[in-house]
Image 1 (cartoon, rainbow, N blue to C red):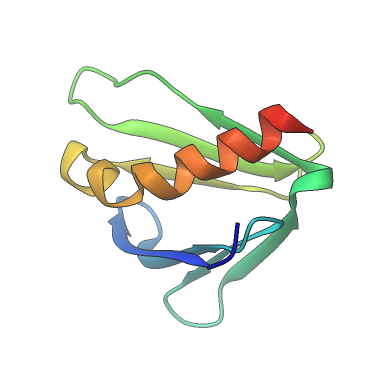
Image 2 (cartoon, one colour; image 1 turned 60 degrees about the vertical axis):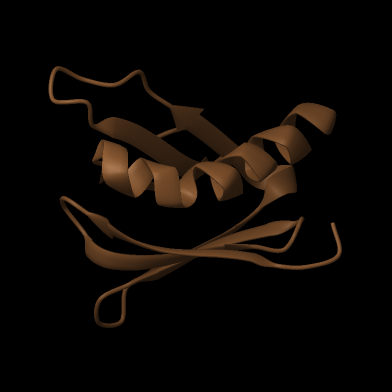
Length: 96
């Protein structure tokens, strides 16, 4: 991948977040000083099925979900904004 993918969206728990992916490192920056950075060689990504309200849960963590990671809860409208970025992360993870 030659360029960085960036997506700006709103999360139900974290507020406004910026996600970036350069092909190796996934970064998430939130309101204030919140941020996380994970290399794909140490990363686990799980995308849940839509819940009753259509929200999609995305867990990003080093090694296993919930371990010093972050959970996004995205409305269908916000999922559309980040789906291409998440899809690229999934593609890289499945190729390793």
